Image (cartoon, rainbow, N blue to C red; front, side, top):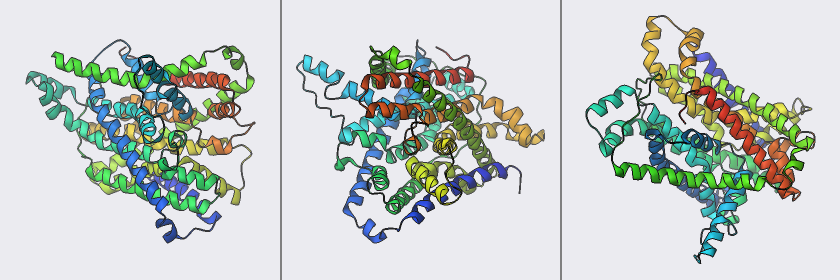
Amino acid sequence: MNAWRIPGSIAALLIITLLCTTLAALFISAPLPSLSKVLSDPYLHHLLVFSFKQATLSALLATLMAIPVARALHRRHFFGKTLLLRLSSMTLILPVLVAVFGLLTVYGHEGWIASLCRAMNIPYRLSPYGLSGILLAHVFFNLPLATRLLLQAFQSIPSEQWQLADQLGMRGWYLFRFLQWPWLKRQLIPAFALIFMLCFTSFAIVLTLGGGPQATTLELAIFQALTFDYDPGKAALLALIQLLCCVLLVLVTYWLTPQRSHSISYRTRWQPKVEGKVALIIDSFALLFFSLLLLPPLIAVVSAGINSHTLDALKEPALWQAVWLSLRIAVLAGVFSTCVTLMLVWTSREYRLRQQTLAAISIEGSALAILALPSIVLATGAFLLLNSTVGLPRSPMFLVIVVNTLMALPYATKLLESPMRDLASQYARLCLSLDIRGWQRLRHIELPALRHPLLQAFAFSALMSLGDFGVIALFGSQDFQTLPFYLYQQIGAYRSQQAAVTALLLLAICFLFFMLIETLADPHADS
Protein backbone atom coordinates (compact mmCIF):
# COMPACT_ATOMS: atom_id res chain seq x y z
CA MET A 1 0.00 0.00 0.00
CA ASN A 2 1.39 3.39 -0.99
CA ALA A 3 2.21 5.70 1.93
CA TRP A 4 -0.05 8.50 0.66
CA ARG A 5 -3.11 6.22 1.00
CA ILE A 6 -2.58 5.65 4.72
CA PRO A 7 -3.52 9.02 6.34
CA GLY A 8 -6.86 9.50 4.62
CA SER A 9 -7.78 5.83 4.75
CA ILE A 10 -7.18 5.70 8.50
CA ALA A 11 -9.15 8.89 9.07
CA ALA A 12 -12.07 7.79 6.85
CA LEU A 13 -12.15 4.36 8.47
CA LEU A 14 -12.25 5.87 11.96
CA ILE A 15 -15.04 8.27 10.98
CA ILE A 16 -17.21 5.59 9.36
CA THR A 17 -16.56 3.19 12.25
CA LEU A 18 -17.63 5.79 14.82
CA LEU A 19 -20.74 6.71 12.84
CA CYS A 20 -21.77 3.08 12.31
CA THR A 21 -21.12 1.96 15.88
CA THR A 22 -23.01 4.86 17.44
CA LEU A 23 -25.95 4.32 15.10
CA ALA A 24 -25.85 0.57 15.79
CA ALA A 25 -25.92 1.27 19.53
CA LEU A 26 -29.26 3.02 19.08
CA PHE A 27 -30.65 0.11 17.05
CA ILE A 28 -29.52 -2.47 19.60
CA SER A 29 -30.74 -0.56 22.65
CA ALA A 30 -34.42 -0.84 21.72
CA PRO A 31 -36.61 -2.92 19.38
CA LEU A 32 -37.14 -1.31 16.00
CA PRO A 33 -40.60 -0.15 14.99
CA SER A 34 -42.14 -1.60 11.87
CA LEU A 35 -40.45 -0.14 8.81
CA SER A 36 -43.63 -0.25 6.73
CA LYS A 37 -45.56 1.46 9.52
CA VAL A 38 -42.99 4.25 9.77
CA LEU A 39 -42.76 4.79 6.00
CA SER A 40 -46.55 4.91 5.61
CA ASP A 41 -46.96 7.43 8.40
CA PRO A 42 -48.49 10.68 6.99
CA TYR A 43 -46.69 12.70 9.64
CA LEU A 44 -43.33 11.37 8.39
CA HIS A 45 -44.30 12.44 4.85
CA HIS A 46 -45.05 15.91 6.20
CA LEU A 47 -41.69 15.99 8.00
CA LEU A 48 -39.81 15.05 4.83
CA VAL A 49 -41.67 17.54 2.65
CA PHE A 50 -41.20 20.41 5.08
CA SER A 51 -37.54 19.49 5.72
CA PHE A 52 -36.76 19.52 1.99
CA LYS A 53 -38.82 22.67 1.42
CA GLN A 54 -37.21 24.82 4.10
CA ALA A 55 -33.72 23.50 3.35
CA THR A 56 -34.06 24.14 -0.40
CA LEU A 57 -35.42 27.65 0.07
CA SER A 58 -32.79 28.49 2.69
CA ALA A 59 -29.91 27.21 0.55
CA LEU A 60 -31.18 28.97 -2.58
CA LEU A 61 -31.61 32.30 -0.79
CA ALA A 62 -28.20 32.09 0.90
CA THR A 63 -26.18 31.07 -2.18
CA LEU A 64 -27.87 33.41 -4.65
CA MET A 65 -27.59 36.38 -2.30
CA ALA A 66 -23.95 35.51 -1.65
CA ILE A 67 -22.89 35.98 -5.30
CA PRO A 68 -23.22 39.81 -5.45
CA VAL A 69 -22.00 40.16 -1.85
CA ALA A 70 -18.85 38.08 -2.44
CA ARG A 71 -18.18 39.90 -5.71
CA ALA A 72 -18.50 43.28 -3.99
CA LEU A 73 -16.23 42.23 -1.12
CA HIS A 74 -13.63 40.98 -3.60
CA ARG A 75 -13.38 44.10 -5.74
CA ARG A 76 -14.05 46.84 -3.17
CA HIS A 77 -11.78 48.15 -0.45
CA PHE A 78 -13.36 50.17 2.33
CA PHE A 79 -12.82 50.96 5.97
CA GLY A 80 -14.00 48.09 8.18
CA LYS A 81 -13.89 45.44 5.45
CA THR A 82 -11.73 43.09 7.51
CA LEU A 83 -13.95 43.60 10.55
CA LEU A 84 -17.07 42.83 8.49
CA LEU A 85 -15.48 39.63 7.15
CA ARG A 86 -14.53 38.49 10.63
CA LEU A 87 -17.99 39.20 11.97
CA SER A 88 -19.52 37.29 9.07
CA SER A 89 -17.30 34.29 9.78
CA MET A 90 -18.60 34.16 13.34
CA THR A 91 -22.25 33.60 12.43
CA LEU A 92 -21.64 29.94 11.65
CA ILE A 93 -20.32 29.29 15.14
CA LEU A 94 -22.56 31.62 17.11
CA PRO A 95 -24.60 29.77 19.73
CA VAL A 96 -28.10 29.53 18.33
CA LEU A 97 -29.71 30.82 21.52
CA VAL A 98 -27.58 33.97 21.33
CA ALA A 99 -28.35 34.55 17.65
CA VAL A 100 -32.07 33.87 18.06
CA PHE A 101 -32.16 36.34 20.94
CA GLY A 102 -30.66 38.99 18.66
CA LEU A 103 -32.97 38.16 15.75
CA LEU A 104 -36.09 38.35 17.92
CA THR A 105 -34.91 41.64 19.39
CA VAL A 106 -34.69 43.09 15.88
CA TYR A 107 -37.44 41.28 13.93
CA GLY A 108 -39.85 40.10 16.65
CA HIS A 109 -43.37 41.38 17.19
CA GLU A 110 -42.02 43.69 19.91
CA GLY A 111 -38.63 44.19 18.24
CA TRP A 112 -36.86 47.23 16.87
CA ILE A 113 -38.41 47.11 13.39
CA ALA A 114 -41.92 46.50 14.73
CA SER A 115 -41.57 49.47 17.11
CA LEU A 116 -40.33 51.67 14.26
CA CYS A 117 -43.23 50.60 12.03
CA ARG A 118 -45.76 51.35 14.78
CA ALA A 119 -44.24 54.79 15.26
CA MET A 120 -44.67 55.44 11.53
CA ASN A 121 -48.17 53.86 11.39
CA ILE A 122 -46.93 51.14 9.04
CA PRO A 123 -48.32 47.59 9.49
CA TYR A 124 -45.62 45.07 10.40
CA ARG A 125 -46.38 41.64 8.93
CA LEU A 126 -43.11 39.69 9.21
CA SER A 127 -43.48 36.78 11.60
CA PRO A 128 -40.31 35.55 13.30
CA TYR A 129 -41.94 32.14 13.75
CA GLY A 130 -42.92 29.40 11.33
CA LEU A 131 -41.38 29.07 7.88
CA SER A 132 -40.56 32.79 7.56
CA GLY A 133 -38.69 32.81 10.88
CA ILE A 134 -36.78 29.64 10.00
CA LEU A 135 -35.75 31.08 6.62
CA LEU A 136 -34.67 34.37 8.25
CA ALA A 137 -32.51 32.59 10.81
CA HIS A 138 -31.02 30.19 8.24
CA VAL A 139 -30.12 33.05 5.90
CA PHE A 140 -28.59 34.96 8.82
CA PHE A 141 -26.41 31.97 9.68
CA ASN A 142 -25.58 30.72 6.18
CA LEU A 143 -25.33 33.80 3.95
CA PRO A 144 -21.97 34.70 5.55
CA LEU A 145 -20.80 31.10 5.11
CA ALA A 146 -21.75 31.10 1.42
CA THR A 147 -20.13 34.52 1.02
CA ARG A 148 -16.83 33.29 2.48
CA LEU A 149 -16.84 30.19 0.27
CA LEU A 150 -17.60 32.18 -2.90
CA LEU A 151 -15.12 34.90 -1.93
CA GLN A 152 -12.49 32.17 -1.71
CA ALA A 153 -13.40 31.20 -5.30
CA PHE A 154 -12.96 34.80 -6.50
CA GLN A 155 -9.62 35.06 -4.69
CA SER A 156 -8.43 31.80 -6.31
CA ILE A 157 -8.47 33.31 -9.81
CA PRO A 158 -4.81 33.56 -10.92
CA SER A 159 -3.34 37.02 -11.29
CA GLU A 160 -2.33 36.19 -14.85
CA GLN A 161 -5.97 35.72 -15.84
CA TRP A 162 -6.93 39.04 -14.25
CA GLN A 163 -4.12 40.79 -16.11
CA LEU A 164 -5.14 39.23 -19.42
CA ALA A 165 -8.78 40.22 -18.91
CA ASP A 166 -7.68 43.76 -18.08
CA GLN A 167 -5.56 43.96 -21.23
CA LEU A 168 -8.53 42.77 -23.31
CA GLY A 169 -10.73 45.43 -21.74
CA MET A 170 -13.25 42.97 -20.31
CA ARG A 171 -15.80 44.64 -18.02
CA GLY A 172 -19.16 44.00 -16.45
CA TRP A 173 -21.13 41.01 -17.69
CA TYR A 174 -18.37 39.72 -19.99
CA LEU A 175 -15.81 39.76 -17.18
CA PHE A 176 -18.20 37.84 -14.93
CA ARG A 177 -19.20 35.33 -17.62
CA PHE A 178 -15.80 34.45 -19.08
CA LEU A 179 -13.45 34.91 -16.12
CA GLN A 180 -15.30 34.77 -12.80
CA TRP A 181 -18.13 32.33 -13.51
CA PRO A 182 -15.89 29.31 -14.41
CA TRP A 183 -14.24 29.65 -11.00
CA LEU A 184 -17.41 30.55 -9.16
CA LYS A 185 -19.43 27.54 -10.32
CA ARG A 186 -16.81 25.17 -8.91
CA GLN A 187 -17.76 26.39 -5.43
CA LEU A 188 -21.43 27.24 -6.01
CA ILE A 189 -22.91 23.74 -6.05
CA PRO A 190 -20.80 22.46 -3.11
CA ALA A 191 -21.75 25.59 -1.15
CA PHE A 192 -25.44 25.01 -1.92
CA ALA A 193 -25.17 21.35 -0.91
CA LEU A 194 -23.36 22.17 2.34
CA ILE A 195 -25.94 24.81 3.31
CA PHE A 196 -28.79 22.50 2.28
CA MET A 197 -27.53 19.79 4.60
CA LEU A 198 -26.98 22.29 7.40
CA CYS A 199 -30.58 23.49 7.06
CA PHE A 200 -31.94 19.99 6.47
CA THR A 201 -30.37 18.85 9.75
CA SER A 202 -31.11 22.09 11.59
CA PHE A 203 -32.37 21.50 15.10
CA ALA A 204 -32.14 24.43 17.51
CA ILE A 205 -33.46 27.00 15.01
CA VAL A 206 -36.51 24.89 14.13
CA LEU A 207 -37.07 24.10 17.82
CA THR A 208 -37.10 27.76 18.85
CA LEU A 209 -38.67 29.38 15.76
CA GLY A 210 -40.77 26.59 14.28
CA GLY A 211 -43.93 27.74 15.98
CA GLY A 212 -45.78 24.41 15.98
CA PRO A 213 -46.14 20.94 14.43
CA GLN A 214 -46.67 22.40 10.94
CA ALA A 215 -43.05 23.64 10.95
CA THR A 216 -41.28 20.52 12.19
CA THR A 217 -38.34 18.80 10.53
CA LEU A 218 -36.92 15.31 10.57
CA GLU A 219 -34.16 16.47 12.91
CA LEU A 220 -36.68 17.68 15.48
CA ALA A 221 -38.59 14.40 15.23
CA ILE A 222 -35.35 12.54 16.08
CA PHE A 223 -34.90 14.74 19.15
CA GLN A 224 -38.50 14.12 20.24
CA ALA A 225 -38.06 10.36 19.82
CA LEU A 226 -34.98 10.43 22.05
CA THR A 227 -36.22 12.75 24.77
CA PHE A 228 -40.03 12.83 25.01
CA ASP A 229 -40.84 9.34 23.67
CA TYR A 230 -37.54 7.73 24.74
CA ASP A 231 -37.62 5.48 21.68
CA PRO A 232 -34.00 5.01 20.51
CA GLY A 233 -35.11 2.54 17.83
CA LYS A 234 -37.42 5.05 16.18
CA ALA A 235 -34.75 7.74 16.46
CA ALA A 236 -32.21 5.46 14.80
CA LEU A 237 -34.62 4.65 11.97
CA LEU A 238 -35.37 8.34 11.39
CA ALA A 239 -31.65 9.11 11.52
CA LEU A 240 -31.04 6.40 8.92
CA ILE A 241 -33.67 7.98 6.62
CA GLN A 242 -31.98 11.35 7.09
CA LEU A 243 -28.59 9.79 6.38
CA LEU A 244 -29.82 8.27 3.10
CA CYS A 245 -31.26 11.61 1.99
CA CYS A 246 -28.00 13.43 2.69
CA VAL A 247 -25.81 10.75 1.10
CA LEU A 248 -27.94 10.95 -2.04
CA LEU A 249 -27.44 14.71 -2.08
CA VAL A 250 -23.67 14.30 -1.68
CA LEU A 251 -23.52 11.94 -4.67
CA VAL A 252 -25.60 14.30 -6.82
CA THR A 253 -23.37 17.19 -5.75
CA TYR A 254 -20.17 15.45 -6.85
CA TRP A 255 -21.82 14.46 -10.12
CA LEU A 256 -22.83 18.05 -10.91
CA THR A 257 -19.70 19.82 -9.63
CA PRO A 258 -17.04 20.61 -12.27
CA GLN A 259 -13.80 18.86 -11.29
CA ARG A 260 -11.30 21.00 -13.13
CA SER A 261 -7.86 21.97 -11.88
CA HIS A 262 -6.22 25.30 -12.47
CA SER A 263 -2.90 26.86 -11.68
CA ILE A 264 -3.16 29.31 -8.83
CA SER A 265 -0.77 31.88 -7.45
CA TYR A 266 -1.10 32.05 -3.69
CA ARG A 267 1.68 34.61 -3.36
CA THR A 268 0.29 37.44 -5.45
CA ARG A 269 -3.14 39.03 -5.65
CA TRP A 270 -4.53 41.15 -8.45
CA GLN A 271 -7.03 43.81 -7.54
CA PRO A 272 -9.58 44.04 -10.36
CA LYS A 273 -10.34 47.49 -11.72
CA VAL A 274 -13.99 48.47 -11.36
CA GLU A 275 -15.41 51.32 -13.37
CA GLY A 276 -18.89 52.76 -13.80
CA LYS A 277 -21.59 54.04 -11.50
CA VAL A 278 -23.84 51.02 -12.10
CA ALA A 279 -21.23 48.63 -10.66
CA LEU A 280 -20.74 50.95 -7.67
CA ILE A 281 -24.49 51.09 -7.00
CA ILE A 282 -24.85 47.29 -7.23
CA ASP A 283 -21.89 46.66 -4.93
CA SER A 284 -23.05 49.32 -2.43
CA PHE A 285 -26.56 47.86 -2.29
CA ALA A 286 -25.19 44.32 -1.82
CA LEU A 287 -22.87 45.39 1.00
CA LEU A 288 -25.59 47.49 2.65
CA PHE A 289 -28.03 44.56 2.58
CA PHE A 290 -25.37 42.24 3.98
CA SER A 291 -24.51 44.66 6.78
CA LEU A 292 -28.15 45.29 7.70
CA LEU A 293 -28.80 41.57 7.93
CA LEU A 294 -25.67 40.78 9.93
CA LEU A 295 -25.02 43.70 12.27
CA PRO A 296 -28.34 44.59 14.00
CA PRO A 297 -28.80 41.20 15.77
CA LEU A 298 -25.19 41.34 16.98
CA ILE A 299 -25.68 44.92 18.17
CA ALA A 300 -28.83 43.78 20.00
CA VAL A 301 -26.83 41.14 21.89
CA VAL A 302 -24.22 43.74 22.86
CA SER A 303 -26.76 46.34 23.98
CA ALA A 304 -28.65 43.81 26.10
CA GLY A 305 -25.44 42.53 27.70
CA ILE A 306 -24.47 45.94 29.06
CA ASN A 307 -26.83 46.43 31.98
CA SER A 308 -26.86 47.10 35.72
CA HIS A 309 -25.96 43.47 36.51
CA THR A 310 -22.93 43.27 34.22
CA LEU A 311 -20.20 43.71 36.84
CA ASP A 312 -21.89 41.40 39.35
CA ALA A 313 -22.36 38.70 36.71
CA LEU A 314 -18.70 38.91 35.69
CA LYS A 315 -17.60 38.28 39.28
CA GLU A 316 -19.21 34.84 39.40
CA PRO A 317 -16.51 32.10 39.71
CA ALA A 318 -18.76 29.60 37.92
CA LEU A 319 -18.77 31.84 34.84
CA TRP A 320 -14.98 31.80 34.48
CA GLN A 321 -14.79 28.08 35.21
CA ALA A 322 -17.19 27.59 32.31
CA VAL A 323 -15.06 29.87 30.11
CA TRP A 324 -11.89 27.89 30.90
CA LEU A 325 -13.55 24.53 30.23
CA SER A 326 -15.06 25.81 26.96
CA LEU A 327 -11.71 27.10 25.72
CA ARG A 328 -9.94 23.83 26.49
CA ILE A 329 -12.57 21.79 24.65
CA ALA A 330 -12.59 24.23 21.72
CA VAL A 331 -8.82 24.28 21.19
CA LEU A 332 -8.46 20.49 21.40
CA ALA A 333 -11.43 19.89 19.09
CA GLY A 334 -10.04 22.48 16.64
CA VAL A 335 -6.60 20.83 16.55
CA PHE A 336 -7.99 17.32 16.13
CA SER A 337 -10.47 18.39 13.45
CA THR A 338 -7.82 20.23 11.42
CA CYS A 339 -5.39 17.29 11.60
CA VAL A 340 -8.03 14.75 10.57
CA THR A 341 -9.19 17.01 7.72
CA LEU A 342 -5.62 17.41 6.48
CA MET A 343 -5.27 13.63 6.41
CA LEU A 344 -8.46 13.30 4.38
CA VAL A 345 -7.75 15.98 1.79
CA TRP A 346 -4.13 14.86 1.40
CA THR A 347 -5.12 11.32 0.40
CA SER A 348 -8.08 12.58 -1.64
CA ARG A 349 -5.78 14.92 -3.56
CA GLU A 350 -3.44 12.05 -4.44
CA TYR A 351 -6.35 9.96 -5.70
CA ARG A 352 -7.49 12.81 -7.94
CA LEU A 353 -3.99 13.28 -9.35
CA ARG A 354 -4.13 9.64 -10.40
CA GLN A 355 -7.63 10.07 -11.91
CA GLN A 356 -9.18 7.80 -9.26
CA THR A 357 -12.20 10.03 -8.75
CA LEU A 358 -14.45 7.48 -7.06
CA ALA A 359 -11.88 6.78 -4.34
CA ALA A 360 -11.41 10.53 -3.81
CA ILE A 361 -15.17 11.05 -3.50
CA SER A 362 -15.36 8.23 -0.93
CA ILE A 363 -12.62 9.80 1.20
CA GLU A 364 -14.16 13.28 1.07
CA GLY A 365 -17.68 11.93 1.51
CA SER A 366 -16.77 10.32 4.82
CA ALA A 367 -16.46 13.82 6.31
CA LEU A 368 -19.67 15.13 4.72
CA ALA A 369 -21.61 12.07 5.92
CA ILE A 370 -21.33 13.47 9.45
CA LEU A 371 -23.81 16.20 8.48
CA ALA A 372 -26.48 13.54 8.04
CA LEU A 373 -26.38 12.49 11.69
CA PRO A 374 -27.37 15.01 14.37
CA SER A 375 -24.91 15.65 17.16
CA ILE A 376 -27.51 14.47 19.65
CA VAL A 377 -27.72 11.11 17.84
CA LEU A 378 -23.93 10.74 17.86
CA ALA A 379 -23.71 11.69 21.52
CA THR A 380 -26.57 9.41 22.55
CA GLY A 381 -25.19 6.49 20.56
CA ALA A 382 -21.72 6.98 22.05
CA PHE A 383 -23.24 7.15 25.53
CA LEU A 384 -25.15 3.89 25.03
CA LEU A 385 -22.14 2.21 23.45
CA LEU A 386 -19.79 3.10 26.30
CA ASN A 387 -22.38 2.27 28.93
CA SER A 388 -22.84 -1.24 27.53
CA THR A 389 -19.11 -1.99 26.94
CA VAL A 390 -16.22 -0.36 28.84
CA GLY A 391 -18.36 1.85 31.04
CA LEU A 392 -18.86 5.58 31.18
CA PRO A 393 -15.79 7.76 31.84
CA ARG A 394 -15.64 9.78 35.04
CA SER A 395 -15.57 12.98 33.00
CA PRO A 396 -17.45 13.42 29.70
CA MET A 397 -14.80 15.83 28.38
CA PHE A 398 -13.19 13.34 25.98
CA LEU A 399 -16.56 12.30 24.58
CA VAL A 400 -17.59 15.93 24.05
CA ILE A 401 -14.29 16.65 22.26
CA VAL A 402 -14.68 13.64 19.96
CA VAL A 403 -18.24 14.52 18.94
CA ASN A 404 -17.34 18.19 18.42
CA THR A 405 -14.35 17.13 16.32
CA LEU A 406 -16.59 15.02 14.10
CA MET A 407 -19.23 17.74 13.73
CA ALA A 408 -16.60 20.27 12.55
CA LEU A 409 -15.07 18.02 9.87
CA PRO A 410 -17.48 18.93 7.01
CA TYR A 411 -16.71 22.64 7.32
CA ALA A 412 -12.97 22.17 7.65
CA THR A 413 -13.02 19.85 4.63
CA LYS A 414 -14.82 22.45 2.50
CA LEU A 415 -12.22 25.05 3.46
CA LEU A 416 -9.22 22.85 2.67
CA GLU A 417 -10.12 20.57 -0.24
CA SER A 418 -10.09 23.16 -3.05
CA PRO A 419 -6.83 24.89 -1.99
CA MET A 420 -5.11 21.51 -1.52
CA ARG A 421 -6.32 20.25 -4.90
CA ASP A 422 -5.29 23.40 -6.77
CA LEU A 423 -1.92 23.54 -5.02
CA ALA A 424 -1.23 19.96 -6.11
CA SER A 425 -2.11 20.84 -9.69
CA GLN A 426 0.39 23.68 -9.61
CA TYR A 427 3.34 21.91 -7.97
CA ALA A 428 2.80 18.21 -8.74
CA ARG A 429 5.20 18.07 -11.71
CA LEU A 430 7.84 20.14 -9.93
CA CYS A 431 7.73 17.93 -6.82
CA LEU A 432 7.91 14.83 -9.01
CA SER A 433 10.94 16.14 -10.89
CA LEU A 434 12.71 17.05 -7.63
CA ASP A 435 11.67 13.77 -5.96
CA ILE A 436 10.00 15.62 -3.08
CA ARG A 437 7.49 13.24 -1.53
CA GLY A 438 5.49 12.49 1.58
CA TRP A 439 6.30 14.42 4.72
CA GLN A 440 8.99 16.54 3.02
CA ARG A 441 6.50 17.72 0.40
CA LEU A 442 3.89 18.49 3.06
CA ARG A 443 6.40 20.35 5.23
CA HIS A 444 8.25 22.41 2.62
CA ILE A 445 5.63 22.94 -0.10
CA GLU A 446 2.10 22.57 1.15
CA LEU A 447 2.01 23.74 4.78
CA PRO A 448 3.52 27.18 4.04
CA ALA A 449 1.15 27.73 1.11
CA LEU A 450 -1.87 26.46 3.05
CA ARG A 451 -1.22 28.50 6.19
CA HIS A 452 -4.31 30.66 5.82
CA PRO A 453 -6.80 27.85 4.95
CA LEU A 454 -5.40 25.69 7.77
CA LEU A 455 -5.73 28.40 10.40
CA GLN A 456 -9.16 29.27 9.08
CA ALA A 457 -10.23 25.63 9.35
CA PHE A 458 -8.87 25.50 12.90
CA ALA A 459 -10.74 28.69 13.84
CA PHE A 460 -14.05 27.42 12.42
CA SER A 461 -13.67 24.07 14.17
CA ALA A 462 -12.68 25.56 17.52
CA LEU A 463 -15.39 28.19 17.51
CA MET A 464 -18.07 25.69 16.53
CA SER A 465 -17.04 23.64 19.53
CA LEU A 466 -16.96 26.74 21.73
CA GLY A 467 -20.58 27.58 20.91
CA ASP A 468 -21.95 24.03 20.79
CA PHE A 469 -24.95 23.21 22.93
CA GLY A 470 -26.31 20.02 21.39
CA VAL A 471 -23.70 17.66 22.87
CA ILE A 472 -23.26 19.38 26.20
CA ALA A 473 -27.04 19.32 26.71
CA LEU A 474 -26.73 15.55 27.29
CA PHE A 475 -23.60 15.51 29.42
CA GLY A 476 -23.61 18.89 31.18
CA SER A 477 -23.96 19.09 34.96
CA GLN A 478 -23.09 21.37 37.85
CA ASP A 479 -19.57 19.92 37.79
CA PHE A 480 -19.18 20.07 34.00
CA GLN A 481 -20.45 23.36 32.59
CA THR A 482 -19.39 24.94 29.34
CA LEU A 483 -20.32 28.54 28.59
CA PRO A 484 -23.38 27.64 26.41
CA PHE A 485 -24.62 25.25 29.11
CA TYR A 486 -24.13 27.94 31.76
CA LEU A 487 -26.14 30.33 29.57
CA TYR A 488 -28.89 27.74 29.15
CA GLN A 489 -29.15 27.32 32.92
CA GLN A 490 -29.46 31.07 33.40
CA ILE A 491 -32.22 31.28 30.79
CA GLY A 492 -34.02 28.34 32.41
CA ALA A 493 -33.85 30.08 35.79
CA TYR A 494 -35.28 33.29 34.25
CA ARG A 495 -32.10 35.23 35.04
CA SER A 496 -32.42 37.19 31.82
CA GLN A 497 -30.06 40.04 32.69
CA GLN A 498 -27.29 37.68 33.81
CA ALA A 499 -27.94 35.55 30.72
CA ALA A 500 -27.54 38.63 28.52
CA VAL A 501 -24.12 39.26 30.10
CA THR A 502 -23.08 35.63 29.51
CA ALA A 503 -24.27 35.85 25.89
CA LEU A 504 -22.25 39.02 25.39
CA LEU A 505 -19.15 37.42 26.92
CA LEU A 506 -19.53 34.37 24.67
CA LEU A 507 -19.90 36.64 21.65
CA ALA A 508 -16.82 38.65 22.66
CA ILE A 509 -14.69 35.53 23.18
CA CYS A 510 -15.72 34.15 19.78
CA PHE A 511 -14.91 37.43 18.07
CA LEU A 512 -11.52 37.92 19.77
CA PHE A 513 -10.52 34.31 19.18
CA PHE A 514 -11.38 34.43 15.51
CA MET A 515 -9.77 37.85 15.05
CA LEU A 516 -6.54 36.49 16.56
CA ILE A 517 -6.52 33.49 14.22
CA GLU A 518 -7.31 35.64 11.17
CA THR A 519 -4.50 38.05 12.07
CA LEU A 520 -2.01 35.20 12.43
CA ALA A 521 -3.18 33.72 9.14
CA ASP A 522 -2.97 36.98 7.19
CA PRO A 523 -0.98 39.62 9.10
CA HIS A 524 -1.15 41.99 6.10
CA ALA A 525 -4.95 41.93 5.83
CA ASP A 526 -6.37 45.13 4.50
CA SER A 527 -8.61 47.11 6.75
